[in-house]
Image 1: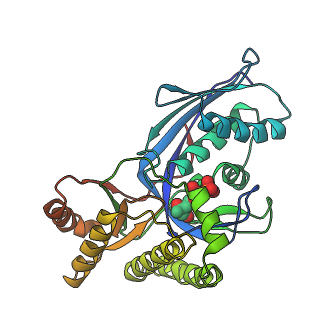
Image 2 (image 1 turned 180 degrees about the vertical axis):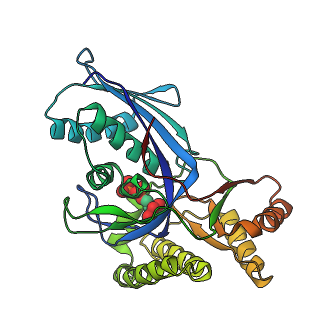
Image 3 (image 1 turned 90 degrees about the vertical axis):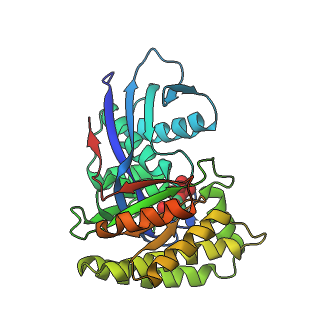
Length: 324
Ligand code: DP6
């Protein structure tokens, strides 16, 4: 106690998406999901519990935060306090190396880093499975950011059985994600709200759950076989299925904007030219292009030609949680 602990967690992008909860309070998902942790985007979070504090204090990128983000953080820390049997408040300093809330999943690295730093600062010594379960309580996708490389979040049935585990931490395949940032603004519909609306109103939701189970098996085989093409085709297909739930919700909504469709089109054109490139999108308009290092230059040139204002970040497989 009173010891400052700093943890680093990298963000992850799902190849088989999580889109809906069967238990919103404990964040138990309707489907298992599978992701790739990235080296480029991460969050560093320092936590110290201090009996002189009268409430939790949070800074994000050096700025004091007092809005709903602090409330979410305090609610999460209540779980940690309960586990550790303490009632002391904490000071949390978090630095995001992720464009916040633009569909680049800063909540995944954010809650993974917070789970690791706060549990250790509270005197707990959790193994990675327990850390994954704890991170899940903050944000579902954070459960996967405890691990490097390819990780699967097993849906499970309850708090004990819903956690991520590594599929392949040291990735053997040549794989990367090119993040094309065209719109760095904050998303209008949060993923939490969006997925609950899809589950409640899309007539295709049950089909999604059934299809996703099949996709997951094929994806794991593709990883085991180093089969990049199958992985890419399936990831794009799974992402489009997820987004079609939003198009078929009542009322319909989408995270896409015009540029999302233009980039999707560009990715398809690249494939027609024989370049292996596949798209995946999350709860924001930006597209991540799944590709191999040999194709980086040609893809970047195609993007620059059509979208001179776009920024492209190249991310490779990244590591799991670490303490600094
Ligand atoms: C589209 O993990 O942000 O990125 O559990 O409500 O915090 P909460 O949702 P969150 O949702 C991520 C959704 C997604 C797909 C994915 O990462 O699997």
